[in-house]
Image (tube, rainbow, N blue to C red):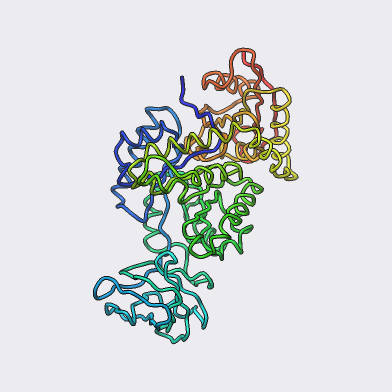
Length: 473
């Protein structure tokens, strides 16, 4: 019997020191991981190449497409080093940030980012070490900033700096990111996670480099990106609510509302959206989550996210398998709840005024009326399947494609079971392949009905215009 998930919302698991062996990666896949994330903030190209090879070997053995997300680091801003490795800053004291590479002390430290010094103004807030320390700029000069410590605490070497108030004149892709991008695009991965996006131009630049070889998954983690939300989502292929950095730069009470807004915007645009960061955080060191974490995962499912993501839980935690298994259980349980279905129906975006959306909406309606076992979509690029997934139908979606790349990309899309199928030649051929796939993959049996949608002429991207009802014989 082929492996199939009994839930619609997908699971992304990050690989790392705790999950690098073929045995652990296979266990995570069997437990429910649909996509594996490689975090390019850590590890060498050789490490990542080895993990990609392990995933591809697993894919061949399981005969199931698996998506790979390469998450590039982006411009991580950091302070320099200290003479003793760390200092203790007191609220009310002055503290200088300058360009001198001399190791710092309790009065000053290097800030090796002249663009921050130039962009800051009197009153600009600087957050250090994930927001634990807060400084306010009192004076700005060409080569340094004088600040007052608003919230003190220990500060050690190379801690991160966030500047929530200012759009910084820095690109979302650093030299390291460009080298990482060249590497992953040659390896053939499905999605590139784009960190610290501020402007639509950042997305356009990454898309130009990817040139169709991978989907660009924009990480929403800066307030400036939220200001440009509609335009950024329009350009992106997929979206991630990266709540870690978003929670540093925005007040915590804003983050849940931003999450809902980002998911709603991506859903309306028909772009896959992922909710990430700290979802089962306590499972890094404990075999069970807190009740609040279980509720957090459930909320993302109720909001209509395509996927939920595990970061350190599977990359560095003590219980990677248990974390994926727990997420799988929470998601599956929520999706059995009648309240989830009524909320999903109530939040369905209106179809856009084109034939592809009209056909997708009709496919959902027909499948609901006749209680079809599945909707089979034929797609060359994934666009037909995305349109149907946007409708959030009651029944599973079979994503049939002749392209291995498209099959893997569909691993992140809500409700889609990707299947490799040969090219189509006629409507009769399409119906025959759809009912054969539905039966072989365990979705339908003799006498069941399947709704079939595709674009005619076959093999032309973005032409969803055909709808059939077929009976499995």
